[in-house]
Length: 138
Image 1 (cartoon, rainbow, N blue to C red):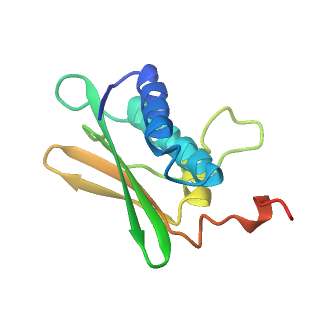
Image 2: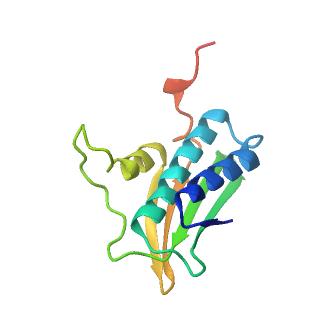
């Protein structure tokens, strides 16, 4: 999907992802996916140039294997002078924690660059997304 290179882009992407995957992934995984996608789109809007047309491209892929569901999120923008960096944020800082959230929720994440811009991706493996600490005991 394509969203505006604007703060509303993150909201549009979150809602579309939640609507499309609500019946396909467990709620705890969906919450993590929505949080990470919001961070990636928000970072693209704040720190990178738009793609031609003033947009950011957002994509996700869900595939099933014998291990379970694997999900990849990808946000493509026009790039920036410096790529995404994890920063050390002081406890009272208003920002600087986005990629720490991505790193904490996703199994892995990274950046790919080409002549048109950059894509930041995050992957979620079945074991990493089980989150037994948040599953209620039965």
